[in-house]
Image 1 (cartoon, rainbow, N blue to C red):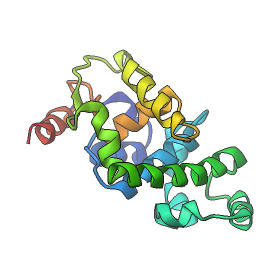
Image 2 (image 1 turned 120 degrees about the horizontal axis):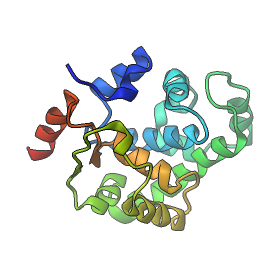
Image 3 (image 1 turned 45 degrees about the vertical axis):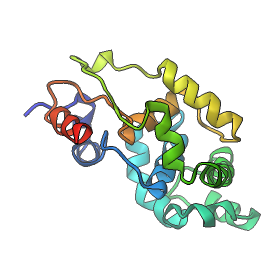
Amino acid sequence: MGKCLWALNSPKEEHYHDHEWGVPVHDDQLLFEFLVLEGAQAGLSWSTILNKREGYRKAFDNFAVEKVARYNESKVNELLANPDIIRNKLKVNSAISNAQAFIKVQDEFGSFDEYIWRFVDGKPIQNSWQHHHELPASTRLSELVSRDLKKRGFKFVGSVICYAHMQATGMVNDHTVDCFRYPQIMALIET
């Protein structure tokens, strides 16, 4: 059974690949979780973030955006002392300011899902990469998403982070064509 090469690095990455990566996400809480995790990954490996994912869920109130938006200095200090997350003050503060910006987007569009999926007209982009090395780190579309998010006050949302978010949440199917998940994700897209 073929599989994307990056998924073979560790059991956690393989499980994430086999069950989550590329599956279209329309739940705002999960979209917020991926936004925080992708931002935390900046400069680090995805395996580092996967290893800390449960720690993030506990530390950030299971990514309840309304709670995160109200975090104060005391909570920031608590988070910066927590070894179960990436203890970077800029990334921690960005999670809070992103929660606030996320709520504004929800107010404007009805949901973050409505906002973010409009960039792909509500339907995932179906790529057909033959080899893992063909996958782009970013695209013109992820640059557009990045600019719009930044304009709305989001932090740690550069073009590469936005493309990783798009891949993670199924806005784009970047499984290679020889991967067993490729036709499964394509079937999800076509229904």
